[in-house]
Length: 488
Image 1 (cartoon, helix red, strand yellow):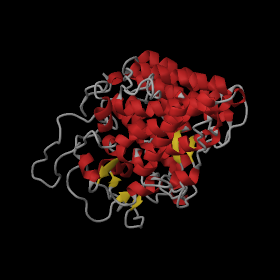
Image 2 (spheres, rainbow, N blue to C red):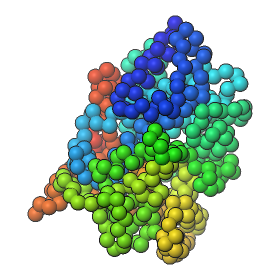
Image 3 (cartoon, rainbow, N blue to C red):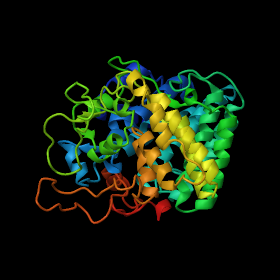
Image 4 (cartoon, helix red, strand yellow):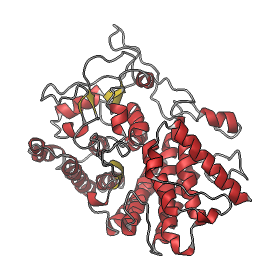
């Protein structure tokens, strides 16, 4: 009976998601075969497809990272909701889908794979555990303490407790380790949109994510997190994470139901390029401009008329602005959405080495990271000609010239479109990098006196109103300006 109730609730959750997300995309991606009388008949491949697609479609691209970019300075709101986010005007109802749909769709589906996996399906369990770790990492990066140990047993724990953020990171590392162990059993995995069932790539990705989440703990334990991150980096490379061919990413083909989700958020001009970020790209002659942005008007202006950005303020934008929609790498209709990348692994290696006092190793990793990203995202012949000059200036560091500021500034550029990770980096380093770019938004840039909207930077999202309504006694007290526990 208990299993039948869980399956019924899962079907209800999925129905709610399909209604609230205003899309029939999931109907096109996978059909769930849920039999209340026989829960073991759940098809793992269908659940995996749905969990992967909802995880990216909801949490990344136009419906998640596209909005979070306002808080780290890559983007600026241009009108409507975008202007409110510029002003740090968020309520408990804003962005709550990031929280609720992650549990109701991704995490619950992944749990059903794990619970119902047959002995010969351990590989499905391994992939599901790795994706659970990723989803928890995404959520805790935004909210801090979150439900986990009681979160998915809705019968026993209808009002689950919130686990301390430190415990969530411990759970993430355990899920990754357990996932790797289950992958070792081998087998076939169908319905995998990300790696097409390649278990070797899944193992390498798990180790890469392990490095990422150890690196998140730099504020609490600079030396320990560096040591653990470097060990995970070495293990990921040994497992095959040695080029962009191993990137964990969601592919799109540009069709109506497989359209890169950045198109939906940025192409309508609600969120546009932040002027300060554009200024950095312009002043450094960055060859990635067209990989990042194009004009909302549908044309790509030539230099130096590329600086069509907007500052974060309450002023409605007018005219043409630079947008990610239709850019050459990130905003094409068939562009992929990245989960985790080789260039990010190298940046983690550079930062961790710098914290460990290994400047020469940090410089080597930084140089490799800069080159890897440039060569991955630049496709236009004219822009490729600019790569050697950029590398000579920003990707040729030595033990005597490399600094943490240089590492984090170059990572900030490269992590464009992975906005939650970028925001974590910005907050871990107290909004210090890139140097001179971060600034608390003002009420109006056209006013004679520029009045900041707050006295400090925004640090987190608010817990969802749905949680306050249904599980209020468990929800931690927090404002937009309270640092996450691991960042205190």
